[in-house]
Image (tube, rainbow, N blue to C red; front, top):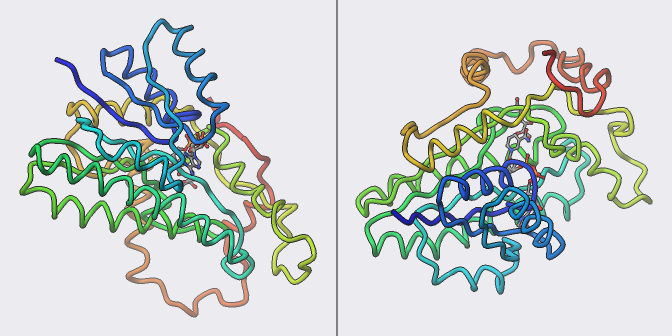
Amino acid sequence: MNRTVLITGAGTGFGREIALRLAARQWTVIAGVEIPSQIFQLEHEAEQRGVVVQVEKLDVTDAADRARFSMLDVDVLLNNAGIGEGGSMVDIPEAHLRRQFEVNVIGPVMLTQAIARRMATRRAGKIVFMSSCAGLTADPFTGAYSASKHAIEAIAEALGKELQEFGVAVATVNPGPFLTGFNDRIFDAWKSWDKSRSDNLFDYEHIAYPYRQFDIKPVVDTTIGVIEGTIDTYRNVEPGQNVEMQRRQMDDAWTRRYDENLGKRFALVETYYDMQPGTPVDE
Ligand SMILES: NC(=O)C1=CN([C@@H]2O[C@H](COP(=O)(O)OP(=O)(O)OC[C@H]3O[C@@H](n4cnc5c(N)ncnc54)[C@H](O)[C@@H]3O)[C@@H](O)[C@H]2O)C=CC1
Ligand SMILES: O=C(O)C(=O)C[C@H](O)C(=O)CO
């Protein structure tokens, strides 16, 4: 049976590996990549692996790019493209905050609208959002990124309830810390801020992503499971070993006092100053 998937942000990281793996599993894969240079790179990798992937430029913030996909009938849309604009909510410049939402929220929703309408007409389809653990809770210095993923959580939740009567399913995947380079880049974002500003509250030169990072395999496996239907849960947190901690963190907001620990540094903030970028989990 011919099954077609459109994956955004497929030039690198999770998206690229999921694209290549699905192609090897006989899916027709349309891999949307942000910039033209990623087209050749992915085509080359597909050739090396002996699989066929249709690679297309699809910057999700570009209306003209999105329009080229608006008449496409796919069985599954994987909204995977994303960026992380790091920095305290006190310091992050307006343009970076807006860009965070353009790439992670507005662009994907506009793309999804066109594809979802066609799925609803056909009364079949699945829309998967690469959300994040950051869509469920929030850490210091990734507030803007986390807000964009919280928005995705709300959008996916509403969309799933709206589309169920049309036979269209919606699901989320929520990775924690995985070593694609993405998390470390979040903490490089300040380097492109306006250099003339001198009133930042924090010294970003000495702040790094505070978690040890996992190999990407569980995220790739789980996303493929959700896409193929061997996994049917709406929310899918990886790594699985973090699920209980994640749930405890979500519950914590119900009992935390807003004035406790005032005047003391939040414990995790210390870790941002101690951690080296790209630290893998201990084997
Ligand atoms: N690596 C991690 O630990 C986690 C990653 N995620 C999410 O997974 C998704 C993929 O990230 P990774 O593979 O880790 O990093 P990545 O940086 O390798 O992948 C992101 C991809 O999105 C593309 N992209 C950026 N702006 C775009 C735009 N305007 N239009 C189209 N594509 C665009 C990039 O070119 C890149 O290929 C992202 O949505 C990210 O938020 C979520 C939780 C944890
Ligand atoms: O544990 C977490 O929460 C995370 O590590 C989430 C990541 O920061 C993330 O989503 C960025 O890729």
